[in-house]
Image (tube, rainbow, N blue to C red; front, side, top):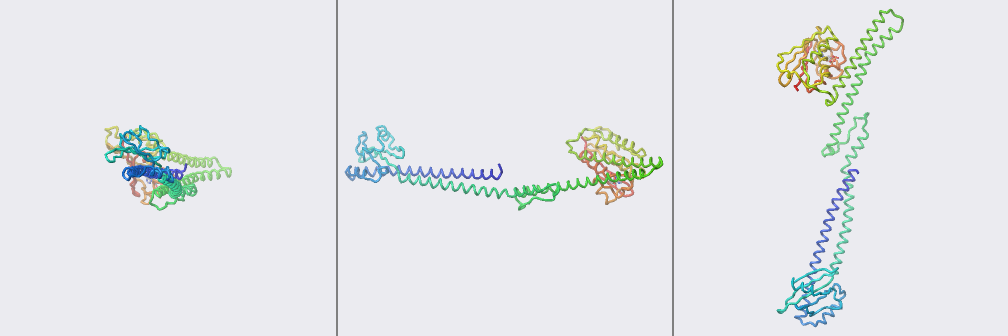
Amino acid sequence: MKIRTRLTFLFSGITAAILLLLVTAIYISYARDREDDYYKNLRQQAVTKANLLFDAGIDPHVLQLIYRNSSSTLSQEEVAIYDTDLHLLYHDAVDIDKVKETPGMLEKIKQQKEIVFKQDQLQVVGFTYSHQNKTYLITAVAEDEYGLARLRNLGYILAFSYLIAVLCIIIAARFFARKALKPVSDMVDRVEEITATNLDLRVPEGNGTDEMAELAITFNQMLDRLEQSFDAQKQFVSNISHELRTPLTAMMAELEISASRERPAAEYLQSMHHAISDARQLVKLSNSLLDLAKASYDPAEINFKPMRLDELLMEARDEVLKAFPFYRINVNFEEPQEEEDYLSVEGNAYLLKVAFVNLMENGCKFSASHEMGVVVTWFKEYTILRFIDDGVGISKQDLPNIFTPFYRGGNGQYADGNGIGLSLAARIVKLHKGTISVVSKVGQGTTFTVEFTHV
Ligand code: ADP
C-alpha cells in the first residue's frame, strides 16, 4: 500500500473515530438528560393531580374524564394513588392501566420512598407522598413522545452530519497527503530520469528547509560524490588505455619495421629485445593496476595479521635489489630493538611490501647514485619509517599531485614509470591507518615519511 493511501486511511480513521466518540457522547448525554427531566416532570404532574384531589376537592371522575379525553393517552401521565395498606384510592383508568402496579412494586415504593424505571418506552415513577399527616403511595406512567421524537431527530442530524464530516475528512486527508508527498513523487520522477549518462541531473530541493528538502539535499550530495567518482573512474580508464597504448604502439612499430623486409639476424635480435622491454613495461603496469585494485578494496575483505616491519623492509629491499642489482639501499634502525612489539603492526604483508618496494625503487631511480636509505625510528605507540634519497627532488608544483594515480612529475623523464607507484603506496598506507608525507627540494633530494601505529 502506498504511503499516501496509508496516510489518508490513518488520518481519516483516527479523526472519524474521535468524531464518532464525540457524537455518541452528545447523543447519550442528551438522552440521559431527557430521561431525568421526564421523571421529574412525571413526579411533578402526579403531585399536582394528588393536590387537585386532596386539596381542591375535584371530583375524581372529572380527572378521569380529562385523562381519557386527552389527544394521546400515551404521553398523558396515568396516575394511581394508594394508601400505605396498598388499597387503591384513585386511578386515572383502571381498564387502560399502562403499567400494572403490583404489590411488590408498591412495597418497594414504601421501602425506598421513590423508585423510577422504564418499561419499553414508558417511564414509571413511584414515590411516597405525605399529606395532612397521612402517607400515600403515588405512581405515574407516561411516554415522553415529544422528547423521544426530539431525541430521534437529534440522532438523525448527528448521523447525517457525521457522515458528511467523515466524507470531508477523507477528501481533505487525500488532498493533504498528496500535497505533503508531492516532493517525494517529484523526486521519484526525477530519479527515474537519472542514468549513468546524465549523472549531472539533480532532484528538486523544494523550499530548502523542511525534512523533504533535507532528503533531497542529501540525495543530491550523494549524486555529487557519485558523479565525481564516476568521472574519476572514466579518467582512470582513459589513463590506463593511454598507458597501455604507448608500449603496445612501440612494440607494434618495432615488429612491423623488422618484418617489412629481410634483415640480418642481429637486427632481429635487437628488435626482439626492444619488444621484450616493452612487454615488461606492460606486465609491470598490469601488476601495478592489480595491486591498486587490491589496495582499493574494502579493508574488511583484506587479510590483516600482526607482522614485523623490519622483516618486511628487508624483504622489500631484497626484491628491489633482485630486479635492479645495481641499486643500493641502506636500512638503518635508529635504536636497538629492545621491545619486539615496537616494530609490529597489524597489516597485510603483500600490500605493505608493494608500498615499500615502490618507495625504495623511486628513491633509487630518481638519484644519480641509485642509492637511498631507510631509517626506522620506533616509539611505544608508533613507528616512523623515512625513505631518504639525495636525488633530483620534486618541484613545488608537482608536490601536491604526486599521490594522484598516473601523475608523473616534471622530473619524469629522468626515469621510466607509469605514475601509479606513489598513489598505490599512499592507498596501502591509508588502508593500514598510517600516514604518509613528503619533503623534497629540487637538486637536493626527497624524504617520504610513513607512520604506523602499533597493534
Ligand atoms: P613513477 O615513479 O612511475 O613516475 P610514482 O607514482 O611512483 O610514479 O611517482 C609519481 C611522481 O612523483 C614521479 O613521476 C616523480 O615525478 C615523483 N617522485 C616520486 N618519488 C620521487 C623521488 N624519490 N624523487 C623524485 N621524484 C619522485
